[in-house]
Length: 591
Image 1 (cartoon, helix red, strand yellow):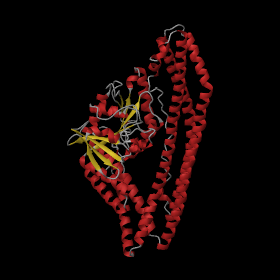
Image 2 (cartoon, helix red, strand yellow):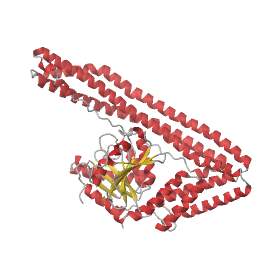
Image 3 (cartoon, rainbow, N blue to C red):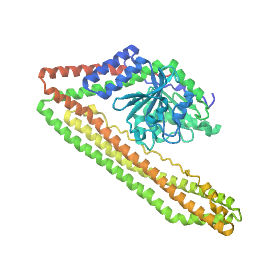
Image 4 (cartoon, helix red, strand yellow):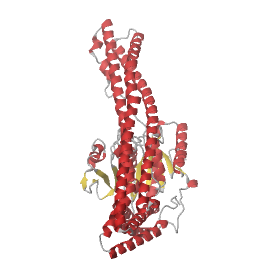
């Protein structure tokens, strides 16, 4: 099979064992989702209920999501356009996609924009950039939750919705969050990797997470046209091995493609159509069963927590509630302090490993570069003014590019190592805080066994990316200078002086860009980790706080009502415990 076609591993099918009779069939799955939704509504678990309602709709409509994932600047939107056969999504060198964008069949061509506050409005296709790009909607200031692009007819395959997500690892932390937050709705994943730089840390993490949840994982190795045949073969073998290493299973298929040139796109499109036509129902059922299984576990845990709280005497419940609140206040303060210390550590690292070296470079290397420029001018001999100006300009451009490429490598290396050290210390503190939440649950409700071990979702430092291309055509500035009209040695001296000034200007400009870019990335990573810690703590305490609140409210009513509530909670636990083993992933490989 050609390298530009799929490498499907039929001998290593992705399979997890069925439990207690296996996954529920379509009608039984629908009934199970309905039961779980009713249980979640009984307990007031709004987030769980929202996921279950969405799962019910997808099952009813027999539509599933193929979600395009990957790091930013991998060409995801360009590949989606190639698969669609039209320039529907905006593309460019910047991290453009800022919100989740769904491409699906509709009654007519239009946009349906859903906002975080529940509002929804319709717009023309031409307005997509206003809502879904970083330039049109910076930092998602409009509060868009999702943009649905509806086309006339099935865009890729019947019953298949293609979902473009923001790139992970962008300097915009909200882009990474949007991609991760959509993982619960992934039925099949299409990872887009770069043939020239496959599998960053962020990509490895995302592949590992998704392959544990999703029955279909397809890898598209983009920009393959930049490699020769031997390098292509090596890149694909490395990617297959790395994907299996981080996830424990082989990907469903690996495609070598060039989104811009069209190479391999037809084969990938055929694979998606096969997924839509022959594998949709089974894949969707397995995906939704996984969502239902996770919901069943969460609902049962919440019911047990509330039951334990409800069984406490009123006075004991009040005392323990106050104790829990005091302890959580301490843990929240500890989390905020840990985040502050991380941010200060990042600032110190930036100052010592970036700002000071850049300042030293400006002091020590400026004279060297100017001397080298003059020496180069002397070597050029008696060239005419315009030729001399062009040669000097090209020398400046090449020299600055080489100088800052090397400087970027040094800064990346030292900064990444220091950030990794800071984040290891931070992760240790995070674990201690989450263990404190677990201890508080045990002290208050003797519920440490229900909380599970602390979960760390913190990501590794994002690798830096920096472009050193000058936005102005500085060469033309020199060549077109009036200095080229001045004859003799005077004109030559003036041209060299202009080239020296251009050299200094470019040095300052590129140093500023490098400093700004690396500051942004490091600070964004620190902010993102702080947000993740806060979310981890709030998630850990949320179930206990809700159980205590519901139990307190129940105790304010009559004893008969309290007994009925305990019976209701017991039934919820029994039903969830009965459903959970029958839900989950089973063999999802092609027949």
